[in-house]
Length: 521
Ligand code: ME8
Image 1 (cartoon, helix red, strand yellow):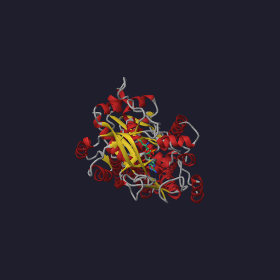
Image 2 (cartoon, helix red, strand yellow; image 1 turned 90 degrees about the vertical axis):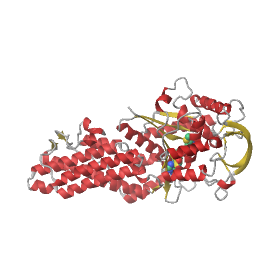
Image 3 (tube, helix red, strand yellow; image 1 turned 90 degrees about the horizontal axis):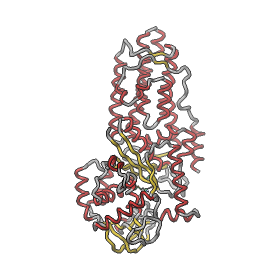
Image 4 (cartoon, rainbow, N blue to C red; image 1 turned 180 degrees about the vertical axis):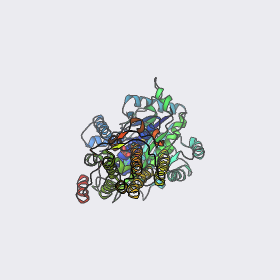
């Protein structure tokens, strides 16, 4: 069985997770479920990035010890992932012993082999990002990542010799054109950071102590990014007695990250791995941001929307559908209450929900709910629909395989629309009136067959809706698998439910928009 190791970033426990943060995990979970359906032995890692000055300060502000704060946040994160049915295999926390011990060892080793050396650092520091910048990297004198004020700081620090590995990394980029996705972000990284030449990276701090201490010089704590990035290997038991997971799953097949942290993953992480003599991950995909009408989500703007109330009111499947559909492969996505309700009403209720309801209603009315077997008489238009569906499957697989999830979903919805149109074209009510039984049987067969396919295709992101469709149509278990998508004539002796259940009930636009605005306050 081929393996597929994928990771989300490990999250900062600095505040409640909004829908933007939830997007990364939703995407990762969808890709995992797709890969599983395709027969991969998958392993999904997520977790928490619990060290650093920012966390120390948040804990202090909340009147808690750092440990109390991160413990509570880890519980909250796990609760959210449970609500969102994120099927992760491990949840690593950087304050766990299994991680801290290995970070100490890694740091020691990099020092011993001369990749890390002691010097002094003077620079412009952005505290929320825990990153030093050179004056030229600033944008309007402020942090290029978050736009906040930077502070002049000087400290004795350990440095990582990035220059030593820069050429090897440039070569790696050339040899692996798909290493960083999407291409636009790879070009950005290459042109803005690699080409001008890398600076050595400051990898320790003395200004606070909430972190992994450098074993041989404990007034220093390890830079949070060096600490955090290694989670992808410490979770697999790197340098441990039992490193069977490491042997099995490393290198990672896919690191999923947001665009704001691609520099750390696309430059520093590969170089750390080279220094450790480990293989580099196969791919790193940096997605865009979920934006609001008035820009980034922020508490001060009062435009933050959290996953819980949306899921509670509209269901998990509608929530995931919206996020994954709205965020394109290489651009940002936008959340507005209006677009959320529109997608719910049009895509889910009108297009998909109605297709199922009309189909079940007609089979009950015309054939007592029964479909016997593949029709004896198949018209041109039926065949054309079969071809359309098989084209959709090929396209959807291609899109899923290259992480173009929004495009994959659009393709599936094209099939939904095409199938709705097929009902209008074949006018089953006329065939019934004219007693064209064989033709009518074929139309009903093809409707059920397409709904079966649609249900399988949406399963990676709409598990419940998928199962409801398959159950209401009483599809045999063997015909619920991804492999069975290539079949088109295997349905026999099927009886649909006589009491169809509405998948998505139409919402009142005005009322629900108000409701979502209330959630944002
Ligand atoms: O970056 N839309 O953690 P984090 C989409 N601890 N994605 C968003 C987003 C938005 N509006 N806001 C945040 C960290 N994200 C580090 C990672 S990994 C070794 C260390 C994404 O909690 C963001 O891009 O700040 C990142 O991928 C994830 O949420 C966690 O962000």
